Length: 150
Image 1 (spheres, rainbow, N blue to C red):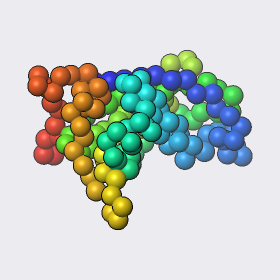
Image 2 (cartoon, helix red, strand yellow):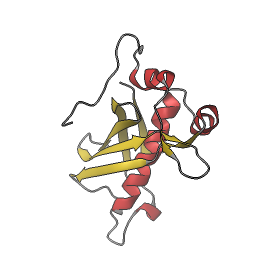
Image 3 (cartoon, one colour):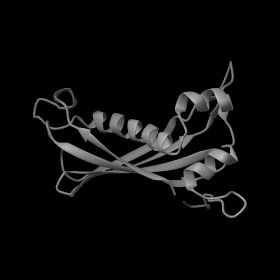
Image 4 (spheres, rainbow, N blue to C red):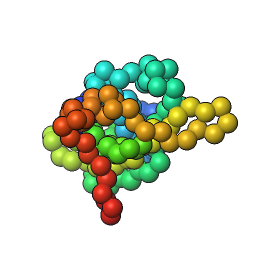
């Protein structure tokens, strides 16, 4: 499965009055990391919207485990990977590490490939070429599906 890593400098505006990152900012970091992952696969979001006539791939589920806080001025590394692809959804996992290598946060998100429709966008099958880029596999050889109970 595809993965990427990016560094993020914790800015003053990311922090609460105690000087630690305000938790919603992490989700903004992770959303940007998902875009970075797609870009690493050669999939620019704007191009995807036009080429596949989609509204996007919004998050429909997210959860995080916060192990240790991050503070103003720290540089952290976010590792992002595709964990699963399905017919119209996919799972992304993020792990945020402090500069000393300690795991600070783990986050999982599920996103849906959403077709553009003027009245009501609906989930649409993810194109095979996109799945191949995200998984690093040839669809004829292997396709990952969610099994019941996952």
